Image 1: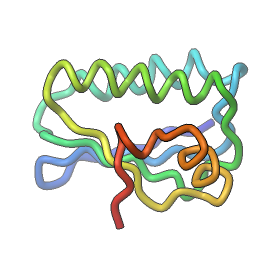
Image 2: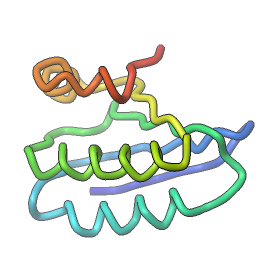
Image 3: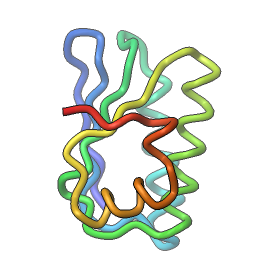
Length: 102
C-alpha cells in the first residue's frame, strides 16, 4: 500500500495505491492520521483510482478517519474509485458519509 498526498488550495489530496486490508491497515491508518493532523486544508479528497483491493479492515480505516475529521468539521470526499472500490462503497453505503465527487 502506498499513500501519497499534497495540499493545494486548502484541500488535502490523498492517493491510495495497492491493497488496503488487514496486512496494510495499521500502517495506512498511522500514515493517514499523520497527514490529517496537518494544517492548511479545509477538506480532504481521497483518490481511489489505484486501489486494487479493500476488505472490511480497510473500510474500518476509512470510517475511522471520517469520524476523526467529522469532529473537526473537515469533510472527506472520494474521487476516481476503482471498480472494486466503487462496488464496496455502493454496497456498504459509504457514499452517504464520504460523497463521491467528479
